[in-house]
Image (cartoon, rainbow over all chains, first blue to last red; front, side, top):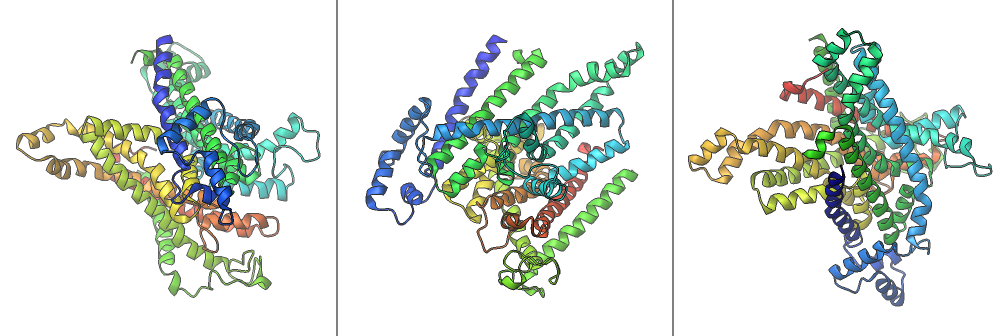
Length: 316
Length: 272
């Protein structure tokens, strides 16, 4: 396992270099002078020159990249032009909110998807199975931001059961209860599509596994059905399920940008969109970098989980 | 068999819906619709009067939905087509020519796939600047690696087959082998992937427009209609519900048609 971990960590290096190059280039994609785009047409020559100096735009591109990486490695993501504060502080302030939302979405979609998938596989072509098929088709076609608005209209505006936006009540004392009440709608919105995908994959994998000889043997020796399904069936279905959960984690991190915008959830995604509209490149770079690094780490965790679930993978 | 027939009927219905929307979008200038950009503040946010009501500026919602269909459908189809073309080209190159082209192309796709899909699109739009054209470029860039991986896998499996070796032994050039023996093998999986991808691309462009990074006002597009209508959701939910429903129905129809196409072109993958 240790050598596998070392190999896997070594493979991270080119990915991290690639991610840093892409994030760095975001600033340089703009067809004009980034300083002029950020400060607008009203900016004075002095302001423009100062910003160019601040961002290091006067140097050759590869030198700028090396400087930028060196600063990032020291935890310096630059200063937000819009907020006039260090980018890292702003991003870290919002990071917790994004993690809470994404982790809740992932938990909901994984647990719900596995339960629904197993139930569908145990009784194929039942009413529940058919409903699950229809829901998965709907889930793949529904814009996440629209689902969020529909849920908000129904549960907040019409029924008044749950708060419509934000992470905490503006005049409340906070606390877990308040957070959970605010979390329900964004988490359900974010999890919906992933839940249906995980459910369909779990169903098809479980159907294949439940028709194997060793399952027949387990039943023949008189094991309780529950034990056959969970101990012998689900345990062996976990590798493909973990794969899709890993992919969905990335989808959820991306989807969080849209969900945070709908529910005014104070996360990195909302901050990034605000940064783009304010043409605040350092802030946008910081947000993209943090989310991308999180995704890279999730992928690493998924790979390590594979090796733990199926030790043969370590020797491939 | 009866289930398959049921699915076919559903696909047929989806195809009729799709054809209807495409036809309406193409014929929008000739249909008896109100001007989609004509502002009438007296008539703002009316659910009745006009067939589907009016938006926050008193503009006719039906007309904006039909004109918006032109933008949304075109954006979805064009970005999927661009992603497919780039992806297939790079996939063929990396699958057929081992060595540095393969290494460069596959590392590039690895890096692009190291980002959550929509996040990278947003980052690219951040650099290029908001607007429909830039949003489409961004989505095409983040969309091509899927095709590259798909095509490379097929080319790798076909490259070593006997009929390719026979063609090479007969003195065929690489170009001839690719055109006559390898590209035809790609057609059906790529067509299936493309048909399922158009819906995903419509969702992605609508998402960017919803964030204010795609279509800019006053142009009607389903995503931007949703974004601007969101502020009036308490007063007039129809302003938000209708464009979202339009996106949902069209993407659902595309997914159903894509599924049917997959069953038709590749019956081996057919499953319940």
